[in-house]
Each structure stands twice: as structure tokens, then as C-alpha cells.
Amino acid sequence: TMVCPTYTLLVQVLDSKSNPSGGVAVSAYEWTSGTARPTKSSVTDAKGNATFSLTFGKYRLRAFEDGILINETSIDLTENSTLSTVRCSIYNVDLSVFVTDYFGQPIPNAVVKFERRSDGVYLEAYSSATKADGSALFSGIIGGNARISVYISGRLSQTQYLYVDSSRRSTELHLDGYVVVAVFVLEASQFFTLAVVLIIVVLFLLILKYKS
Image (cartoon, rainbow, N blue to C red; front, side, top):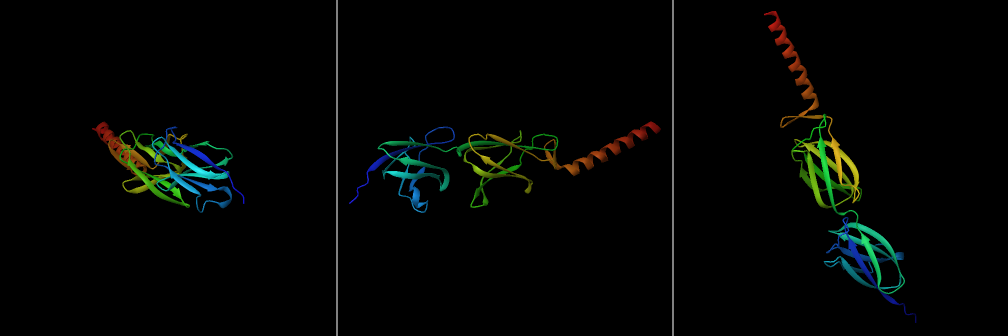
């Protein structure tokens, strides 16, 4: 009969701002068994802590928020009361998105959609409209592999692929196809056509005035 020692594993989960994260689901998987079924699972308390009683060995620790994997790490459990700090750099992230036109002016009232990649497919997770300064703020989100999509008057205008974590605080999407005039957003082709027509009209009026 072989009796394997059982040790206590203390896990603390921190978010992208190094704050304790309560209510996060943490699962421990034996290294050789893959991630099909966890050996033990727990939910962190208000201080971001979870405690496991496990047989000594190597384990995968996976942290989930709303069913979304926010961190995966490995640990060798070889002594009692082992402490493992799990830092989730994509959890509780703040991202500012700036949308500008052909001339670099801010575009207000554009709809910005944050789409997160899941199983090779991008699914909409958050949505916000730009303010007068062309910014849309996504606060306290779950990042990772993402796609930012900008819609003008309901039409998809531009997309950007990026990885969002604690090191990424802002991004800008420059829309060459649009120009902001006063509070109106015009397609660049329309703007330049109107500009040419206006120049022709002004020149015509000047010629008439000169002849008279």
C-alpha cells in the first residue's frame, strides 16, 4: 500500500492592476491528465484567495471569469502550504479607443465594438459610442486576442486586430474614408467633391464680379 502525502496549496489571484480578484473560479488539473476534468476547483474569496488540498505533484492552474479563461500556469506542489500567485494580465483591463478622420480630427458618435476571439471566432463582448473627442472607453473588461470594429451610420468602416492586456492602454483607428464637418461625418469622396464644387462656384462668382 502506497500512501501519497497531501499538501495544502494556497492560490491568490490578482488582476491586471495587481488587485485581489474575488469570485474567480480556479481549477487545478494533474499535469498528466490534461484539462478535460479538474482534480479540484474553488472560487476565490474577497481577498482573491483559494485553498486546495492536493496530492504532491505537478499541476496546471486555470483561472476563469464568466467561463472565460483568463490565466493558465503550472506549479510543482512538493511541500505543504505552497503559495502560488496567479497574475491575470488580461482581467480588469481599461482600454481607450480613439477614432479619427482623414485629417486626424476626432469622429464623434461612431459605434465601437470590442470582439473577443473564442475558438477561432470573434464574438462581440462590449460596445460603446465615441464622445466628442473621438474616444470610447472600455473599463474593467476581459482582454486577450481581440478585434476592434468601428461603425459609421451603421456601416462597418474599419477593423483592427490586437492583443489587449495590462501593457495595452489605448489604440487609435484612423479612418481615411471620412471627414468631419461641424457635427456631420461625410465620406471623404463626398467632402472633396463638395470642396471642388464650392471652389468652382467661388471662382465663377469672382469672375462675374470682375467683369461687372
